[in-house]
Each structure stands twice: as structure tokens, then as C-alpha cells.
Picture 1 (cartoon, helix red, strand yellow):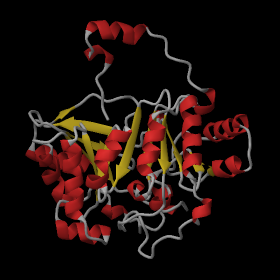
Picture 2: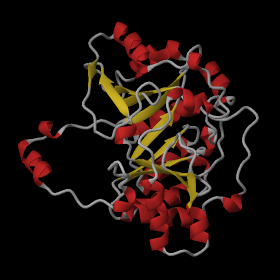
Picture 3: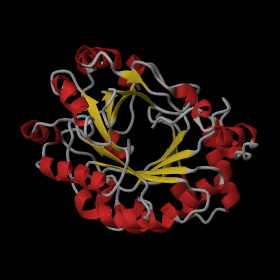
Picture 4: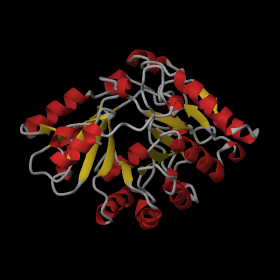
Length: 353
């Protein structure tokens, strides 16, 4: 999620990079703080084949009736509209997106949208090895795989299900099929997996992995407890005691990850610091929930239904106006750490991460 700065490009490319006029970006997707939202996350389902402790309350969640979820055609219609307005990256999330029966077809259709550069998926990896060859053929560009532990017994405790070896097989399949980097998302929780930081970093030595350590976040139903949060500075400190030579990598302005690399290692590690150092100022993302609500902030509880509008046969202009108004209401930044933990929001499983 980090890229070279213009200064590091070969001179010929750099000249173009600096002189090309930026294409006009849709006013509807630009908020009152000038943030241009070119990245859309679409949740394909609320269902999941795991039951991760920090994502879903133990008693499960009340699923939305199927008739109220977006149909495949509605997903494509919305994706097409957003891409026309300037979105160039779409990530499919869930629940677990790979349990949606027509996920390959959705990828293939979204991939065809003119102007889209990246179509990505965030998955728990259980179905990945089986589906990835078809997903790649359909045009999937990028993969994030969630994995919070390298210890099989601990995996079962965290996700309340079996399947560790399937996830490892999925990661290997992604590497074999040429995805580079293969991103591995690891939520770090004190007392559960912070003792595995070095093992995760070691994975990047010989494989093109980007292991992304995510600060544990408070959500309704995940029994938020400040003591369980390990800050990025603490993680970095632990890792630097083992690899003091670890170096910082340059990052894109809108990147949510701070990237580092151990010299000589093939992969890299990143930190997603949503709690200790928010990145709201450069936020470029919007989310559509599986039941068709637009969320302009992961931590905000305001939502607007795009599904209802589609189903009442509203015009495209009206739909764009509704999206524009929601984007315009987006706040400068989300509530502070303490306030978030007090806030009512959907459990993570119903937001789509």
C-alpha cells in the first residue's frame, strides 16, 4: 500500500507525472474538506464461515433478510455509477465475500468498468485456494487475507472454527499465482497474539508478503477493553529490538498503512494505526453495506440507503445527489478513541470492515 514518490521515478516518467493535468474529479465524491473519494468498499454479504471474537458478538448477529440485501445487478449498477464519478479502486468485503455464490461473476463484471484500476478482495482465506484461479481469471488484482495467529490451536480459539491450514494454503496459492504483494491482515490483541509479532515478520523474509499489523479497534459487541490494544509504537519497538536495521518505506498520501522493511527481506510489514494515529485527513474511502447503505466513515453511525432509491426507480441524477449529500456531510475526523468505544454502531461483521 506504499508507492514510490515522483522523485524516484525515471526522469522521463517523472516529467509526465508532474506536468499532466489531473483529470477533473467528481464534485459529488469530494467532501467539504477537499477529500476525493476514489476508493469504494462494497460488502457482498453479512454472512461469514468464521466467528472471530473481535468481529462478531458471541451470540451472533441478526442477519438482514435476503430480500433486503443488494442483488448482483444492484451491486454492478452502484459500482458502475461510482466508477463513472471517479472511483478507481473497489474492494469487495463481507462478512466473508467468498461465500457469496456469484462472487466470481461479480468480479468479472466490475472488472469491465471503464476507469477502474484495481479490484481487490478482503477474505478470511478459508475458500481462497479453491476459488482463486477463477477469481484471477475474472480479473481480481489484489488480495488481503485475514490471519491473526500462526498457531493452529489459537486460530481455533480466535475464530471459534477450524480451518487454519486452509488459510495457509490460500496464502500459498496467492503467492503461486503471482499476487505481489499478498497482504496478510493481523489484528494485534494483548494477551492473545502480541507474542507472535516476530514470527509474522519472519514470514516476510522469503515470501512477497505485506504483513499488516492492525491496532485492535473498539466495536459494539466486541467487548472493547483498552488494555487489549497494543499501539503501533509498542509493536514497532518490539520488532526493532530483533531487527534494529528495519527501515521506513515511502507511502502514498492516502495510505492507511505505515510501511517498513527489513533490508534483504522479500516482503514488508505495515502498521494500520486507526486508534493511536488516525488518518482521517487523507481518507479517500466510502463503504456500501450488504443491505445497500452508504457509510462515509467506518466509525460513524450515519448511513443513507442507496438500495431504497434504486428500488423506487429513482433517476441516476437523484442517486448521485443523495451520494453527494452524504459525502458532503462527512466529518473532518471520527470520534476520539474513548468516544468510539461508547458509540452505537453496527458490529464489524455488518459493516464490511
